[in-house]
Length: 173
Image (cartoon, rainbow, N blue to C red; front, side, top):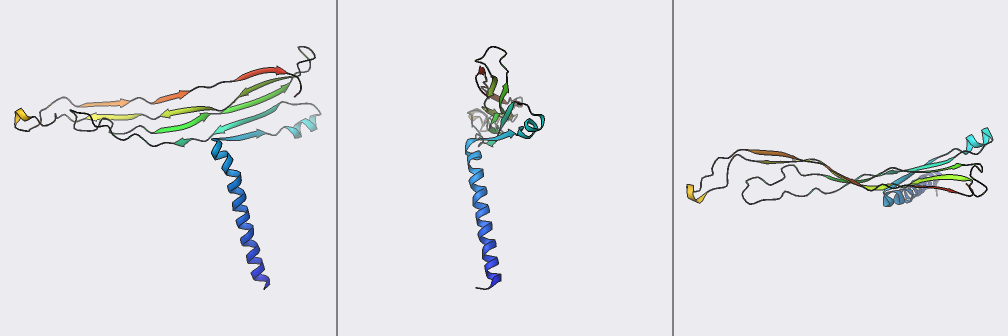
C-alpha cells in the first residue's frame, strides 16, 4: 500500500473517530436537557494554599414545541387564534455550591452546601386572535352576511416553573 493511501486512510479513520466521540459526548447533555458547567478553582486553591468553595452549575437547553393549530368556533369566520402560541420548554439554571466552614458550629459541621437543581420551565408565547366585521351567512337575509363590530385581542403569554433549593450543613467537603 502506498504511503499516500495509508495517510488518506488514517485521516479518514481519525475523522470518523472524532465524529463518533463528539456524538457520544453530546448525547447525554441533549438527553438530560441541561449542560453541566463546572467552575475549576483547583489552581487557585493550590496557588493560595487554602481551601476554596466547590462551585458548579447547570444551563438548560430550550426545546421548542409544536404550536396548537387554529380552533374553529361556530359563529366566527376566522379561526379563534389567527397567530398561534408557540410553546417552548426549557429550565431555570441550577447551581451547586459547597463552601468550607471551619468548625464554626462544632466538630460535626465542616461545610455549608447549597444545591439548587435546574428546574423545568414551560412557556407559551403570546398569540393573536381576530374576527372579521361580518357575521356568518344568514338564511333570513338570503345568505348574505351581516355587519358587526370587528374583534381583535392578544392572548397572554404563559410562564410556569417550580424552582427549589436545598441548604445544608454537614461533615467533610
